[in-house]
Amino acid sequence: MTELDASGALTPRGDADVEAASGADGALGAPPGAARRQTVWADVRIYLGAVVVALVVNAVLLLAIGADPLVAYRQILSSSLGSVAALAQTLNRMTPLLLGSAAVAFAMRAGYVNLGVDGQIYGGAILATGTAFALYGLPAAVVLPAVLVAAILGGGTVALLPAVLRARRGVNELFTTVMLNFVAFYAADYLSTGPWTDPVAGEAISVPIGAEARLPGFLTGGGHIGILLALPLVVAMAWWLRRTRAGFEFRAVGGNPRAAQFGGVSLVATGVVALVVSGLVAGLAGGIEVTGVHRRLILGLTPNFGYMAVLIAVLARRSPLGAIPAAFGFAVLIVGSDSLQRSVGLPASAVFLFQAVVVLAVLYFEVRRGGVLAAVRGRVGR
Image (tube, rainbow, N blue to C red; front, side):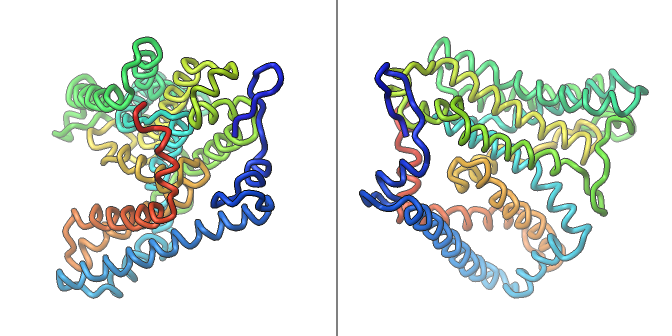
């Protein structure tokens, strides 16, 4: 919450102060601890209710196509969590979803919406692949960090243009970030079918990167340590937003830009930081996909990770920490639903239908509580 001191500067107020003033549900004078408990239990009820509704609706859909819902749900859990190898694949899928959704949530906290995560993932993947080729043969202790740093910079570079256009010309980032998705996609298409193409493969993939540029394994079944890189980064983002003065000013811009500007916060600088940092985080996801999963640049590197990241960020209420369980749940659903195509003959598009049901169920309960309306109120009309 924004408070102005005697000099007119913004002064952070703690979460307890905010809750004491307004309460979790707007009740004036509610004790801080009680307000926090009310908020937690309200969140639990929302998500438990959404899960129950989603399970029931998806069960009806499964029955409509002649599948046994209990068999399908058991298959989803066993194929995504039933073994160490299955868990490894789920964590592999969770990593880009977590980084992408944390990137979107970070920008949202300042009032900006980054719809260019797919393009930033491709930007990170392109620079990671190029760096791996350029440093081929050097020690892994040199190559792998350089490749990941290049991936981070690649994502930030793709996000820089929308940030500058928003800061200098007032161009809405919704349009520029989406358009750059196509630019990055076709850049990857050119490289994977042209200078870097694998002549043996016969499709849009590059030659493999060297072993020195690959992430070490984690667990078994093709797992990699990408999740061990993503989790500390997301926690650090959440800490910065909640525990630093700069993070408070960042959130103040998203909550009330006019008051933040009156208190001395630069809206231009905040917008650039929001979008560029968001791109940096998304770029790391592209580097991890290249070095840990595909080990080359491929055209299908991001199967709509960016748009799923937006959904996860909304479900997480623009919280990087909240994105952790939400991204894990989506990863379980994706990995588990993929196996249903083989076990019960479910169409490939069914996974998107399942995701849509889950999202709609959560949003329904959120709207009933008023959480979504409050979250997006500051964004409408910007």
